[in-house]
Each structure stands twice: as C-alpha cells, then as structure tokens.
Image 1 (cartoon, rainbow, N blue to C red):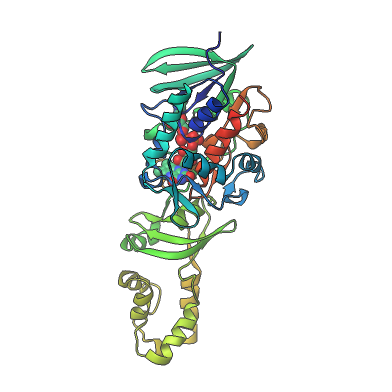
Image 2 (cartoon, helix red, strand yellow; image 1 turned 135 degrees about the horizontal axis):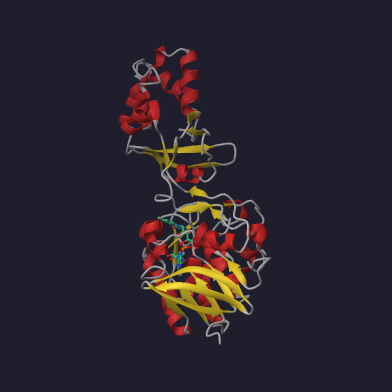
Length: 397
Ligand SMILES: Cc1cc2nc3c(=O)[nH]c(=O)nc-3n(C[C@H](O)[C@H](O)[C@H](O)COP(=O)(O)OP(=O)(O)OC[C@H]3O[C@@H](n4cnc5c(N)ncnc54)[C@H](O)[C@@H]3O)c2cc1C
C-alpha cells in the first residue's frame, strides 16, 4: 500500500513549495532531503537575506533552449502569488534594487520557517538525512531507494517529483541526482555549466586585474547575446560583481566580453568639457575623479595618464574613448560550481509538458526547479521559477 500520494526528492525551494501546495489540495507527500535540514540554499541566498522574487519577472529573464517553456508556469503562479503567499504567512517584502524583493526582516530563515511550519500543520513529512540513490518505474508508480543516516531503505509512491536542484555547491547538498535520474529514464539532458559565477583572468593581464582587487565600477557588460548594467568587481583572480555574474550565464569558454566603464556618458565629451576650464589637469587626476585613484593609476598601463588634458591629441582622446567604452576581456574560465549560484542547462524542456512539468514519456514523473533547463538571471528570478514549478507540479499530483 502506498502511504503517500507522491515522493518529492529534495527539500529545497521547489520541493518545499510543492509539498505545501499539495497539502493545501489534501494530498499527502513525503519529502526526502539529503541534508540534516531543509532549504539549505534558501538560507544562504541573497547573503542570508533571500531575494525571494523579482517584481519584473518575464520569460526574457531566463535562459533555456525553449525560451517560451517557463511561460505557462509563470502564468499559473505569478510574482503576485509569491508576494501574497509569503504575506499570508507573515513575510512582507521590500524592494532593494531592480525589482529584487527581500523579506523586511532580512532573514532567509523566515522564508524556510514558512515552509517547515506549514508542512507541520498540513501533516506533510520532510524526512532529512535521506539521500536518494536510485529510482525506477514500477507497474503502479515508482520505487525509491534511499539511505537514511547511511541505512538503505526503499519505498513506493504512485508519483515522483524530482526537485533535487542543480550542481552548484556540493558542500550544501548539491548532487547530480536529477540529471542522472533523467538520463536513466532515457530523457535528454541539455549541456550544463556553472552560471551566475565569477570569471577568472589568467596570463599576461592577470597581474593588472589583481592589482585592482576591491575596486567596484558601475559598468555595462555585454557579449553577442546579452547586456547588463550593474557593478563589476575586480578581484585577485579576475572579475565578479552583479554585472559579471549576469553575463557569465551567457558566456562560453574562449569568448570575449565587452565593458563600458562609463555607461552614464561619453568620456571624450567629459574630457573636452573639463579641458575648457581646467586644461592643466592631469588625465590621471581627471580619471581618479571619475573612478578611484587606484583605478586611475592602473589605467596608466594603457592610457597617457601623465599628460594634461589640454595636451591630449585627438587620436589619444579617441584611444581613451575606445578603452573606456569598449574595454575587452577574454576570461580564462569561471570559478566553477563551488562559486556558482545556479546551473545552466538541465533536464530538457522538450521532455516535459510545460503546463504540468510531467515527463512526456514517463507518466507520474515530474521535474521542477533548478534541475530543469530553465535558468534565471540574478535577482530573485531563480526562486520565482522554483516556487512556480513547485506549485504547478502540486496541482497534478
Ligand atoms: C550562494 C547562493 C545564493 C543564491 N541567492 C539567490 C537569491 O537571492 N535569489 C534567487 O532567486 N536565487 C538564488 N540562488 C539560487 C537558488 O538558491 C536556486 O535557484 C534554488 O534554490 C533552486 O531551488 P531547487 O529547489 O530547484 O533546488 P535546491 O534549493 O538546491 O534544493 C534541492 C535540494 O535537494 C537536495 N538533494 C540533492 N540531491 C538529493 C538526493 N539525491 N536525495 C535527497 N535530496 C537531495 C539538496 O540537498 C537540496 O536541499 C542562490 C544560490 C546560491 C548558491
């Protein structure tokens, strides 16, 4: 006899939302979670404050081989639904920047508590320290084999939800289980890569970047697929900061990225304006006024910073303009899954019904959250996908 209507693998954002929503519909589920507590990534998200959604969510903020796939889930569970849901359980949101919503309390644990309290009230069991090792289809559902505190166990359920997340940060519980399970069911998995991840610089430019460690510059960063205007941060090993994390999701090894280090205006116009009143000013001091002294000093490697503004030739001003507004970098790589916020790629959207997130090939098998090939931008988009996909799956258990 099945004790549960469904087993959910993974007690993260998607699995917890799915368990609660299934509970509202009177369905009994069991959540199997590898860690000793649910919601590990929610707890560390947004620097421990949890940027739990974004006011401006649309399909354009997601990367997927099928850019339309997420639309159905987002129409079934909207940003307003997320806001209302959390408000109902005592969490008011505040917008920090660019539509990013955080709890007023600034405590990610408040978000996790909503789910653990609701699961308790609804009688939904979250069984921790349980790592699922294998799943297989049976005549009337699925057999799930797992280890609870190292002891092998198994159980059956008519429906199975795989919400085991992506590959980033193994020490927080991340596994490749979702991808492995999909392949075992003969489902296609699209190529995966770390995303929302810092980029490394090696070779001849690396010392120049390292010397600038700690400098933040508001920039526009772009490649041939996307463009973002936010801060970049120089580090000892390369580049980080929100604009870099964003473009990293669109970056392929070997490609260049481009930066406008002064998106608010044209540097040559600013030079000619300054020159009229202050022609004796050194380019170094002029640049230090826009950026920092450290950054202006470092620009001396490429620009004639020892010259005064009046003595700059037209060709030199053009070179400065090109450098500042069209700064090019060829990253060596990324900081990898240990530093990535999400995984790009995953279970192919071709395999899933976009309205239900059920496998087209295997009845009763659902995939949600990060293990699916739907990857959001930085800024609360990934949680919105996790909540929405969890909600949608719950409607069909
Ligand atoms: C540092 C950091 C900060 C982030 N900040 C934000 C943010 O502010 N806003 C935002 O929108 N997104 C943020 N993200 C991304 C966000 O955390 C994820 O997109 C989201 O958690 C995905 O939800 P999920 O339920 O699919 O996976 P997860 O939340 O990762 O949950 C999957 C769960 O499955 C468990 N599991 C894995 N394998 C097994 C197995 N074999 N058996 C049993 N359990 C298993 C894991 O332990 C985990 O608890 C951040 C990510 C990181 C790493």
